[in-house]
Length: 111
Image (cartoon, rainbow, N blue to C red; front, side, top):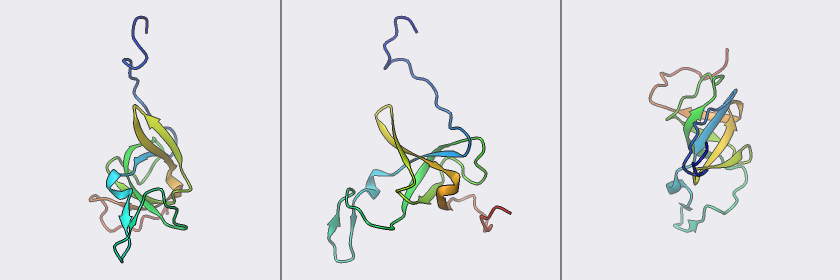
């Protein structure tokens, strides 16, 4: 737009296909071991899955909605910065579990 600085003009974002935009809560970055040792967020733990909150979903996502918490492998992700906030982009098929109040005991399987 003429006369508008790039930071002042904000465009809406739409996720495509089966992509899921999530954000890991800041409180889950650091954690403590059972012995009380503080483990920084940058420490690599092999085969550890992580929880994140869903911010947006693409039109082909069938079981996930914004507001859900999802369990995923941190190695199966793409990092993105949107307006100074850190987000991750995942595929729906790379998500291992969904935690949500709306789940009514279904199997979660694609049948």
